[in-house]
Image (cartoon, rainbow, N blue to C red; front, side, top):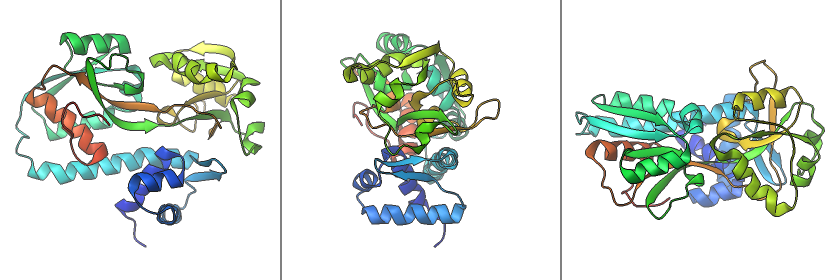
Length: 308
């Protein structure tokens, strides 16, 4: 069967859901259709994209790499479908976009590049700020829109948001770790291991949300704001961590391998999306940026004020 966009959509949905059944529900197709499409895609690519286990599926290193490519493919297709018919490519203006650290480094660049190619007369002024400053800037008007971790959003009374992607959080561990042989990994298991804690973009606060109800605490040996430091330490066997698929890479800077496993716990996803002030209408340029990103991930722009 030829390589198809349907298979890519099914693959992305499965990767984001972590379970074939959930992906089927989301797409409105049968579980068997998802399974067949993913298996065919694996055959065509010549790699295993998912590890199968009782709790669902998790991306292999090859699957994680292909996920980034798959998202770029779908975004490019959506762009190609829209751009030739657009009457607004000559629109000009400036959009002041607040971005958080993780979004700036691991999400926005390819979408920024595509937007700039499509709308060359619109200047995106990217401003990296912590979440609190972004929320304040949206409310006081010093920012037009933000691309941020909307799962961290606090001021939901004054701010609206659209979720673009939901990135699952999984256990990161070095190759050869004893946990790789376990069918189920719990927070109690992880609490027995040395733990490397990331702090950037409120990662430590988020971790507390799922550790505290368990009555357990991770055995933190090092706290850092550097994702690369976490990656290197985990790969070297200094400890384990729980972080999102979006920032996962299968190799450290030193060339050591990192693997991932699902955790049998209620761990929230890291949601990336757009946020803006409820009571401030979009400029024409801001609306184009808003709709462009929504089109890239959902196939159509949504009206301001709609929540995903």
